[in-house]
Image (tube, one colour):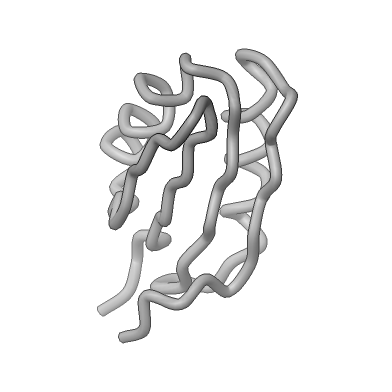
Length: 80
């Protein structure tokens, strides 16, 4: 299974709750096991995105923070 993103959600410049709302919609478009890259600038995503993944069973592969920008790689749940 590849960790290469199938798609990217650019939520930079958006504030809570928009990044997670957009993430929820974008994840629905992916097949189980596909990876989504999320880019954000809202610090609340550091709390919200891991909780989103935990609650819905998605795998948070990467979470990095560099100079006020946050990057996440999320594998959609449901892959066998």
